[in-house]
Image 1 (cartoon, rainbow, N blue to C red):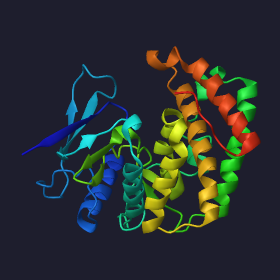
Image 2: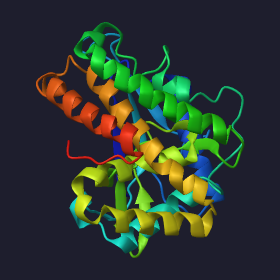
Image 3: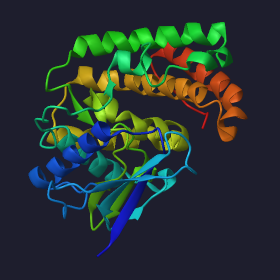
Image 4: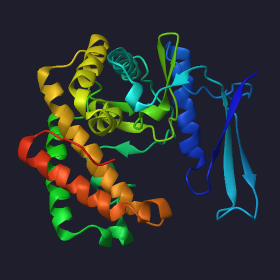
Length: 292
């Protein structure tokens, strides 16, 4: 049969995190008609992964391998996405946020992408020793945007209607299309978060890549989402705040990954551009992007 072997770099994942991801994917398989990366179920526990050890690997000298069933489908670039595609993506996420939820077992461990998880001291996006790349002026803008996101999150609360398990990284590269269906890839960053925030990765991407027809694409995604999971006008108004929150998380991600050569060379320029865009958001309530 067709399979995909996913390798997890050393230090990026541990056993509870990995088994928890696989638990959710298995629940999606058995409880919904959604297509996602399903782990091979030939193992007795319904999940199959292996750990390899080599002194040639960076510390801690181990790498996890997970075997998934192959998913048929065609990827599209963000430039090729249609309104119909966006409607289907919206419907997929709405199903993920409703029938795709499940009651995890004891020991289920995934990141929490609430305000603290995104912007707090313990956040994976906390630049810590790389904070020097962020200027005082940029930091002031970041704090103001984070406050707006916090206000929206507090107004939503963490009820089952607003908060649960989310994909957290549904960009165009992580979506396949097959015979009219949408299939999602790469649940590596999945965790607990606000459902509205789960709409923002693809919308944030389209704010830049499809600025000329962004409004139509957002409308189509929202229509597809709300056909499955009805929302209020107030929820629609929160989207740009969450998209700005995604942009702020991306700025912090740049600082965290400053040691990567591909990031180090572009980080100062991108931080400056994205901060200017966030500053305009604070003035207008809408995030308009030109930065990539």
